[in-house]
Image 1 (cartoon, rainbow, N blue to C red):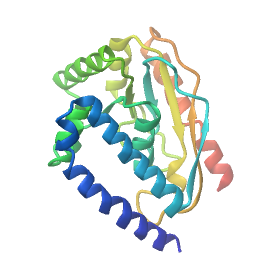
Image 2: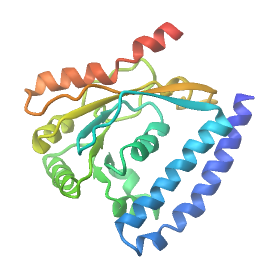
Image 3: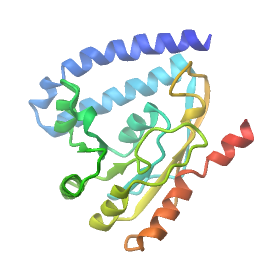
Length: 233
């Protein structure tokens, strides 16, 4: 049954996503505001498909700030990428440059206002990331980064990439860590399973802390649900 649900999700969500992405140039004609409204509808489609096809519901603990902030999220599945974009009201999402090079979708992502970065994290790439993040802040938008740099399985806790500390220092914003346990039900490979996933917004961490301290606090906070995963088996 879980495999059937997963196939049906793929058929409906990705089947509808193709025409949605191909139609992106239409709302783009009306500016970024219209494009972000359009993207919000796409994220709502994922949420609907997850709830009514896969049987996955979301439990939210804590809340985002009511002002721009730097959000540092755990990354275990595609689900939180779109769900956080929806909940944080169109933040500037830091993503790998390969995604921004996908035909049509990549163009739309750039128009939306994402922040593409190279995996190599060269000095030039980091400066470009900080420049784009400051521009997003100037528009009153938050910035969302997945500081471990890649999607990981439940229980995996890689160190934070260097780009996070540079962004934290450059933006001088509070950091809100976001822990998730989506990988339990939405694995990278294999069938997705019904159940409840948790998205936990941690206590804001103030700007201006030494690098080691802020990295340690963020790393602990975004991985706090791993203990719950172990207890649930």
